[in-house]
Amino acid sequence: MLNRLFLLLVVLAAAAGGAAFWWLQHPLTLAHDEVEVSVEPGTPVREIVRLWHDAGVEDSPRLLYEWFRWSGDAKRIRAGSYLVARGDTPRTLLDKMVRGDEELESVHIIDGWTIKQMRAALAAAPNLKPVTAGMTDAQLMAAIGAPDEKAEGRFFPDTYVYSRGVQDILVLKRAHEALERQLQAAWALRAADTPLKNADEALTLASVVEKETGAASDRGKVAAVFSNRLRLGMPLQSDPTVIYGLGAAYDGSLHKVDLQTDTPFNSYTRQGLPPTPIALPGRDALRAAVRPEPIKALYFVSRGDGTSVFSDTLNAHNAAVNQYIRGPHK
Image 1 (cartoon, one colour):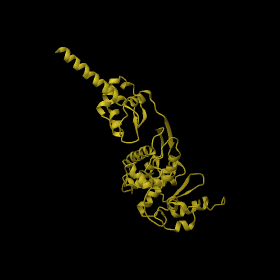
Image 2: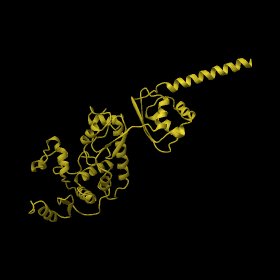
Image 3: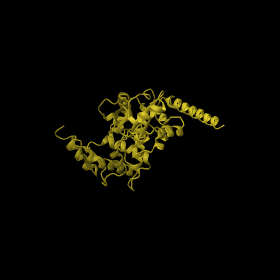
């Protein structure tokens, strides 16, 4: 009787071992063609498993967790960004993380770019799959889980590192999430007397400030001018908003007729903020929009060297215009 019981246990152990070996060599079940996860330094094994499961690895989290522990390599998993595709197995998944087997590229998204410029940069980025290339801006926003948002201004300008072969939508999601974090952080710091009603208005004003600022030292003053105008109900009279509204009709020069031609973005013919942001604002522009410098200026004009002259009155502004725009050097 004992011999039979021992034999049964041996058979069951062999069967279990065979099943485990088969599972380790069997392709992972993925919710998408590719699944990417970023592992931060010090992330516990159980959390790493959860990240893979949440990202789209549909195999049993319990089995993956036990495999990582049983292998003896769990403590050797390296921080990094990892990609698995159809055909990868539980064994290759762990091997990649232990070896630090990631191929990284980077794409730069620049402060002040429009969504069109950003999408062009992503399309040209090396080893980044352009799965959103055929999408409209509205379809793109739906694809990243923000169907109720307009695309302009909703991505944070920064340098994004990614694994080779990853889909561009993953970079877009990260840029969108980064913008939301930066926007909420800025909105929490808003001045008590801000004329802005919500974070979305702050984003729109920040985009105008971004496009209007030639010198970083002027950013808070530029924001102050527009905030002061909003409080008084004065039109913003911002050339970049007019240019944005012209779209493809803009020929590189802004003409008097352009300032007089009404569009939803013409801040000479309409009061208040534009209906959407006009560019991607950076962190400093976001902070300036919600907490501008405490000055009373209502006007500014470029000196021609990137800096501006700020004036509290129209007479002072006209004098600055005469000096720097209509002066002898013209």
